[in-house]
Image 1 (cartoon, one colour):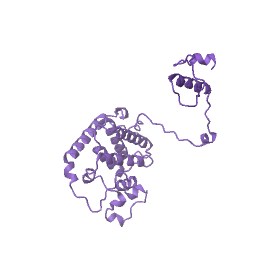
Image 2: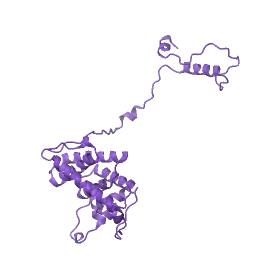
Image 3: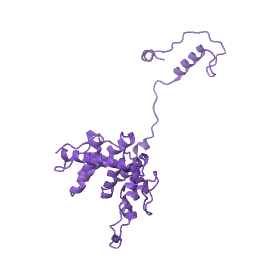
Image 4: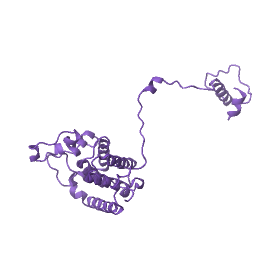
Length: 263
């Protein structure tokens, strides 16, 4: 080893000259402490001073995806930022809904579901998307025909978040369904069906939040702020729904850095 390298890498376990037997073989397990330290010293001397990683340039040419997480929400379009009073009222209403749901959960859970209601298993992502949003929205089918409008086909339009349904969902299912819908919303438009279910699932979400739920609702708020900015027609009803979700995530679930600044 060169003197310069020796100065930069001082020995932590200096080995003095010691009497080793003539038959000392560094390739076999050491029998004494002296043999062990000597073997470490020999192996260290054999290591190259510089190691170059072997990189395949072909792999670097492939398209790479980088996910960047924005810390906050995008501001509301000019003229559409909710007032502080409105936000405080929505938080109060939401709190009342949660209290009522918790108080009457056992009652609603005991109610019989209609024969056409079959709740998917917790891990059935596609099943829950169709259950909540309906085949028409999930599969982006055309609007229902006049004949189909004569009666409500929940298979096509999705089941609403009835209390008898959401009361049967444990926290693991609530979190899973929330994840499924947020994933769908990440590439799709906001719909009334989606808004109703997001509100209901947030109402069922227990505090304090688990880390997974914490991450999900922050992702939801950011996505709502993105869609709100991209809304071409500036539909007031839709922007109000997006403002509501952002408000609940930021002010009820204490994600203050995501809150809309009062107008």
